[in-house]
Length: 401
Image (tube, rainbow, N blue to C red; front, side, top):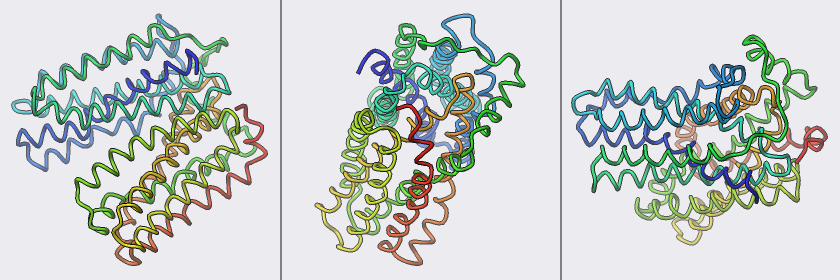
């Protein structure tokens, strides 16, 4: 731990805070206010900027703000704009201006996605190679804490101080990111940004595909977390409907204890990477992720058991947190510092493809084969990524760690 890795906690917090304010928390606000379900369904589209952020990431590689450098300059600009945008959402409210609030929510989502672009690039640029694992783990912890505060805590606060005050408080918490960005260090090595916008758009793609295993790396990024995501799509439904646990029990164990296990896993995974190196960490943590799916298969096979449920949830979230830390470190290691913003945005968008496509068939698969076979299939879904990882061991073994 040092200054560079330490600042990843508050910066990760600032990155994660706005997400729920334009998603689950906003949906709760609209529901409580009496907005009809059709309108709420349309408003869920405000999250599109998070999926499409790679479209404007080249601009953030190419242009350097006249303050605080290329990465911190964009971070401070988006953070200050987020404070104004979240505060404007609080003042507007859904009661009399639902569509104005929706436009503000889209603006906040756009600014939040832009902050993510700048922060991801800054994290990859400022962390030295041996610090990537622990830096990724610490930033994941900050991100998850922020989602808890802007999600569950915000819902609780809304019952006591009202929605307007809750959103104003969330806007104030963004100053944590502003203060941290102001006192954060610049990357140790000088990096020349792209000279033209054309270079900023096409340079990252040409540079990535100049590597001999480029296609294999892209496929690895899609497949590495797909088994973990496959099992996670229906975990809550499995515990409540499949096993008969109450929503309170699932909330305490799967959401509460599961969050703590994920945070511990992210931190432990980053720490282990310092000694293990990138490839061995990816292989070990990926294997643990795959095996953790079998723990839910055991629960489905044995029936309702609190001991087995707690063990399965703890194992799955712990290994998932470790795998996430290693995966983020992998993405950082694959970025050329000239084009970090664009390459990281593209690679992270590619990684989300697996999560998108495994969701829809999950319910049909469970109805066809049952829970035991379903979780065994999610274990099998993790094996191609591990096999591909092994084939790329020579290349990944040369990556700095």
